[in-house]
Amino acid sequence: MTTTTPHITDEQEQDAMRVLRASYWESVRDIAQDIAQDIDLSADDVSDRVAESVDGSQWVIYTWRARLVRSLSDYGDAYEECGMFGNHTETHDLDAIITRAAYLAMYDDVCDVLDRITAK
Image 1 (tube, one colour):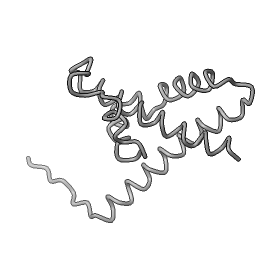
Image 2 (tube, rainbow, N blue to C red):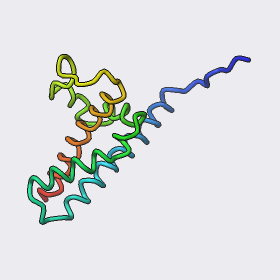
Image 3 (tube, one colour):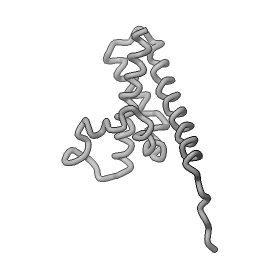
């Protein structure tokens, strides 16, 4: 028995990406807003909270979502800027690399949104 893949139009693909982008950015804003509410945090504490929150995000811990972050984030190339690939790669596990890249991108996105919130 052969199965056929349903044809997905460009419009349907764009709609799906809009939904994913909205979900990703809602998660980023939620993390930033949660941290911004705690006004007594030092800069180090803020950095730690961002790191912990992003590390536990579904956009980082689930590989299928982490694979999407590069296309959804304003910092999809964050892994390149920190020298993550090439001779600096600590692992050859593709899923671990994808997860790390998603973490770096989302961390920067959350910091940007947090900066905008606290600047108000």
